[in-house]
Length: 91
Image 1 (tube, rainbow, N blue to C red):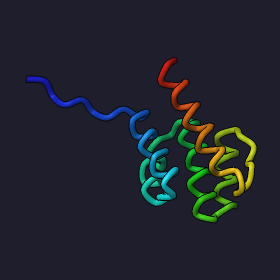
Image 2 (image 1 turned 90 degrees about the vertical axis):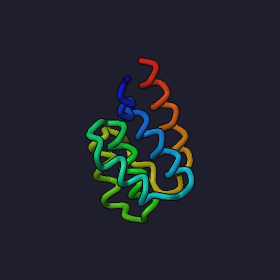
Image 3 (image 1 turned 60 degrees about the horizontal axis):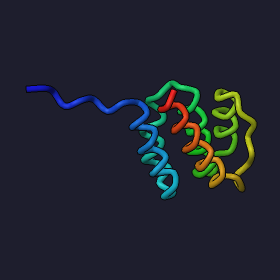
Image 4 (image 1 turned 90 degrees about the horizontal axis):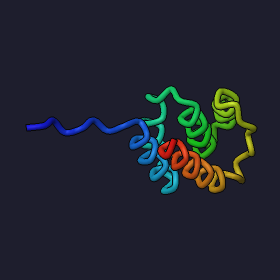
């Protein structure tokens, strides 16, 4: 009998994106803070943008080597992160 497979990091990030899209930044934060990837750092920046902690958001954008687009671009950033996650899963 096989063990259930452990969820992958990509599965976790996909779940975090669902939370971000729903405005549930606290739940997304629980996921992204455990992941050390560049994509997770970017998403961590999105979390703090939604939270309104823009200084912290800018820190995470720098860590992800991305330009901080400001709070008005949250929905575009979520969509772009979703595309990047899809590309990462195909690689």
